[in-house]
Length: 423
Image (cartoon, rainbow, N blue to C red; front, side, top):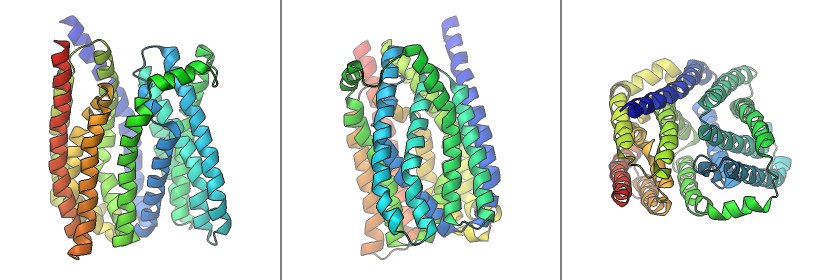
């Protein structure tokens, strides 16, 4: 009995540390957002959104998703070996990307375009470092470091965007501002990396590193295609909206999508990271994970009702008032996407469970169906039925909501199957 109480208090402590850090970071970001949107246009916001999607996809290539294995590996030294290996692959991808962008940078007539291409490889490097460092911190339960990194990213990035916007740099100001925040935030994890390097004394070219890479090959072979599919989906959405509609429409969509993701970043990610660490321990000890799953889903379902209901009913007026009249349509998009993002928020912590249970292959197939459905509902209405972006988003939102509910049902099925094997 006391063990249960202590376990719950430990989980609560970790969640509070992460939530408080994330809350401060989000408050900073949200406080600056109205000022940033008053300086920049939806078209410029769309260019930043496209940049972020490209970098996210390539950063996944850099680490091959070995960062997900860091909290799972039983031995600390073995986990750090994977860390070193993933860091090495990150440097390789960084150099390749740097070589690739030399040509478009050299041919670019506009400064903004040159900056867009030039910052891609550098942003890949620091985003990969952030991903690796975050999961290493999760392993060591160093949630304060994650919180500090998020606050640094938010404050430095927001201040940079505002300052560069006032200087009239346009979309380049947004991209450079995002880059500055990411670089400074990753410093927290770089420091931690060198501390761990002294403790474990692991060489980057050690044969044991590659033996471990082979042992956990399901992460690059299965989990990597899965996350690549998710990130590639977001990039494809960006490209499709840009081609089928306009850069302004994508900028409006991107703002509404990011604002609806705030509860997920604010609470869902924090709970999800603690959930990942605790479930990893339970699976290694062959214990039932269903109680934690039910608690996570129930908590997020209750927390989501009020904020998502307000956006669904008054999104257009809220966005016009907070972000200025030129962003009003972003509020309309937010109203439409509310059911979809609400269910995604509820699903966010438990979506990591298939990785812990080594069910990546099955989950990949399920998620692939979601991507196919999303692409089809985004392409077919405007091409074959000449629907505008409003009607198209309604179709996308409704179909994705239903599919995500089905996905939650299947994830619980994985947990029940694991419980039956343990009984």
